[in-house]
Image (cartoon, rainbow, N blue to C red; front, top):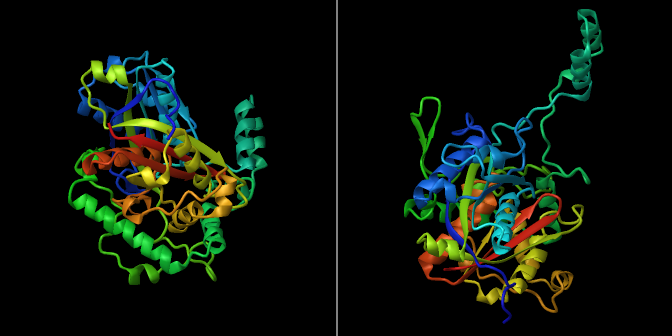
Length: 431
């Protein structure tokens, strides 16, 4: 067993998240910036940390507000933090929060920072709606016009088709395929049946419901009082369906391939609003301030493949590299948290870990191995709790560290698939 890459140890001091809510429900009046600020405020309160100790805020988001594209800076400009706190935003699709955490950790390991907050937020209730090119051009020309006549002339060229709004597409620019279509392709290529997918989805909901009932999941959240009246309070993830059954899941029709498909709304993660953040420090800083970390960041890795192949399979390439950098094998892990974009994607990733062909692509001589299902997503996953694109990576880390502590485990790994054929993996050690 080799040692991890040298450098200052990065402590994961604490983490917190909002309850996750399906888009268009509880948080429809809140922006991603609002959710991020609430999360950071709660993190500071829970850790009794003075704002002056925070040197940087690093945040991820996938669908940015075009009027405030640097979400990290907007989050940092809150009363609890000094205006001199550095801030930058990152985007690695669904692995954005993971990348934000990695960025902040790198700066701490290098000695450039001692204390940083990292995470992500997403409001899919408030995605920007764009104008069609014809209407956008008319607006630009009208803005330049120097007379009423010139303004009217600019708008006279607008046709009815130009008035149709354009919403952001969840499709690959290079292939035109949506994530759902890619998940269908992966199910077919890897021989994953509809029954397997529905069974995995049911498992996610039941484990998340159990974690909510016994307080393990809700311990990582805080109640969100929703403006403007503050009479509505979100206290738990509203996508968990404890009452669902295999029969109910089996009755749902495929969404992306209506004739031959197997991916449904029931075995896929829903569009979700939410935020999550973690507090990172150098080992020395954590000790000086009297904090007991919930974990140490031991390694991370990213990988990429052709989006036209198997879009969401890159975690199979990232995980072996993260484990190698950590000096660990799959058997050394006590827990694994895999982002559940789709049941077919998780099951494809698990098959990939067992595949000789994928092992060779990852530079291994033999497969990574079979994942013990008793160690996998032990409190459910994104299918049940939801998936705010920019926040999920931080949510996975918080859940992983907390559950390692409860179970007395030593090592854990999280993986995230992401648009563009990207994959991310991170290995942590219990403090």
